Image (cartoon, rainbow over all chains, first blue to last red; front, side, top):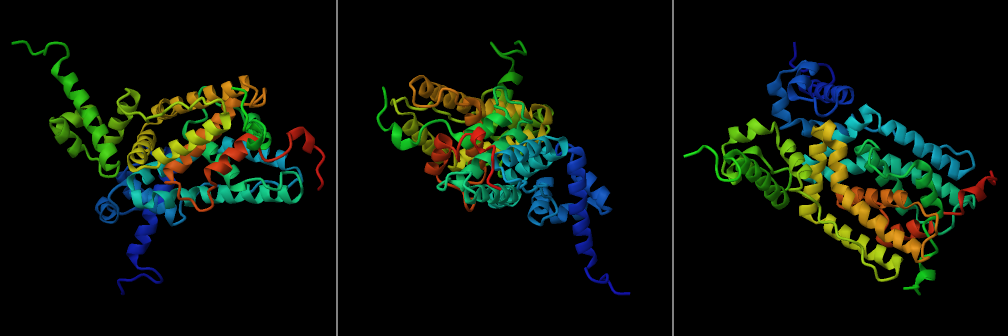
Length: 205
Length: 205
């Protein structure tokens, strides 16, 4: 009998099993309770095998994100024809989902993994937040086409604000004192704080 | 001779020394290279002493943040009389500082510490981001008083966006493809994307 399984070699199967085990344990139990021992046990491999491939649980989580095993369940914005409603509904929905325990565990695991791997950190965040960005920009672009948003709207910057606020609230469980509600966020995003910059060149002070 | 030093007992001195050592190593070498061994050596205490008090480097970083040993150097916004200029200058300055290696190390250390301590996570982020929030809200409130910003401006929501975007860019080193520039962020924040929500109730679709 050959030492290789049909298709992938045994070590590749074990490798995949470790990643899958880490994902399942992370989303069910949280990053804090994730251990190399538990990952090895769930994957059905020896702890030494796990340590041979990865120095830490953070490194496993990082590979799970970069290999696509671990991803946030981003969903596209609705296209009802009203961009304001679609944006508000999407933001409410994402906030509700991202602040549930398994999503918070996922994002916290990601931040810990990024902290442990300087080289991969930007890639990790891009992989994780990219789908959210793309959905937001795509829906806003339709709003521009349909004349509901100003033609010169800075869609990338708007996406930075939306994704940044989502990350901020997810990391804090939306618990920060003084954080505004979703309607307030939408109001700022759509209407802004004040007149266009050019008109404030002469200040009253 | 008494077992207690004058003032604080010896263990309290060692405790402080460990926190100070962790802060210095983190900001000079980054979170990835921070180890319990290096912290113990720099603090001049045994490794077992460090492990007796903290289970991991993440726990030391968490205590350093919560005890005020480790804080981001937030600075207030200028008050030149022109809120747009002050906001733009401040945001540019903070982004430049927050994406330097020591600030990135600090924020990544914070995120790793928060990932390892579910109970303290929200407190950690509040402690870290609170000063930035307060400075932004305070300056915007003056802009409202001086008639440069709309009187009903949602300042807390605006601060959510600003702080969220700062965190997002710091974590990613500002490297995400497609991220808008500071001027674009200011444009969205001040002028918004479109007409007030009420005016879009009838959609063209």
